[in-house]
Amino acid sequence: MIKEVSLMSQRLIPGLVEKLKRSCGFKFTLMPLLLLFLSSGGVASDFTSSEPLPEPLTLEFALSKATLADSPEMMNYSGRLQMAYARQDLTVSEQGVFVEINGRLRYVDPSKIVPSDKTNDSKLSLDIYKSLYDFGRTKANIDASTADIASVQSLYNDYVSSRKINIMQAYFNVLLADIIYNQANEAMAVDYVQLDKIRSRFELKQISDVELLKVENNYRKTRRDRSQALSDQRLTRHRLAQLISPGKLSANLDKPDLEQLHLLSVSRELKDIEQLYEIAYKQNPRLLASQHQLKSVRYKRDAIQAEKYPVISAHLQAADYARELGSSDKYRAGIEVRIPLYQAGQENAKIKLTMGELIQLEAEHTRIKQEIEQQILELWLKISDLKEQYSDPDFNMEYRDLYLDRSRALYELEVTSDLGDAMVKLTQAQLFKAKTFFELAVSWAKLDSFLGNSMSYYEH
Image 1 (cartoon, rainbow, N blue to C red):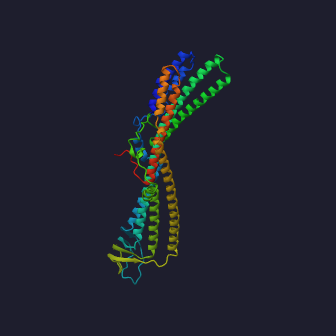
Image 2 (cartoon, rainbow, N blue to C red):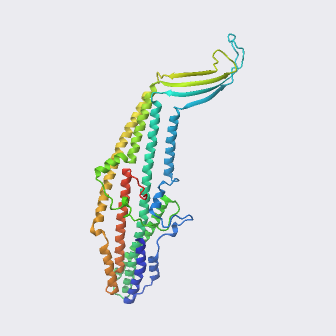
Image 3 (cartoon, rainbow, N blue to C red):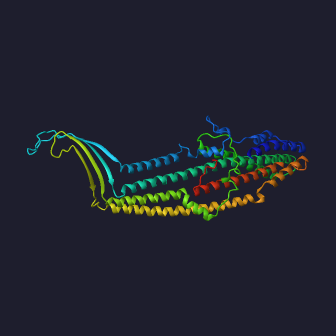
């Protein structure tokens, strides 16, 4: 659609200008500048790179960069996930076997009542420890670490979904910026034709300087609009490049066929709002992460409560002594029981801390749930409006196409010369249609994100 408008302007507007020259005898002193405006390709050369991306760039490829490993946010989640796994490994290791070698070098002055008179009291031993039972404390800690991992993974999934939405929005913004640039380019061309005509009439004393000033001001405004549109092209491309390939971007972007992509198209069915709420309660990544955090703190509370119970462990030892006494056993094997009697109030303090944390997390969970309900409702209403807008007969561009055909026919009959104005109206209609399609696609993607649905739109 973008290329069609640009080619149409290059093909038809110069003919209009030439016809006006022949029929009205105007002098077009700025004709080369006008044609330069119309033939301008906008921005392209600023975004090429030594390692080019696919040409043209597709939305499918852009979305594949959502998990860009070297992005700061991705590195942050990777680090958090790695630490969560490490804490789980540490907790699991408490149930494992601990093996150590203990040695000592010691000189003694033996007592006269000791049978041995050796002064060398060195010792070397191999000790093996294994926790046998701690009344659920280790299991609770393991369950807490598993919930922590699940929470980070849910937040990571939510972040990836947000990245895809941002990439999709940035991609569409580039396409819209191109359409707006073409519209501004053509509007300025039309205003320039009008300005040149008015100047010629002013030279012939047919209009006042006030009328000339009005048209000149209008032309300056459209020229500023075109300059702003060109800046927006650069800015939107830079934003997209930052998301998928910092420092480089394809010169051209492919316009996705959203009609063929059911999950982002107008034809997708919108469920009732209550159904969407129920799905979000079960699958929303942020809600799931909050639920896992609550589970983790509850498990940690259980582990703290289990600290008042005994810990049963096994101990094996093989030793060698430089000086053998009655207690110098070569081998030992036993079961040890450690029973805590008093902890100076630490247990109660720890439980109070976890209860306070639980209250905070429950409040946060309620806040997230309310926020998600509000956002889903807003999206539900927005999608409903966009679908209704699409079904409105006025949405289609048939009347604008007919207007363009009529203008072209009248132009050929030399009745009028409003073809440039017709092309501007056509471009405006295309912009409105593109905005509607793109806004609907982004709204569907946001809804999928809140519902915890898969956003692999291009997987077959």
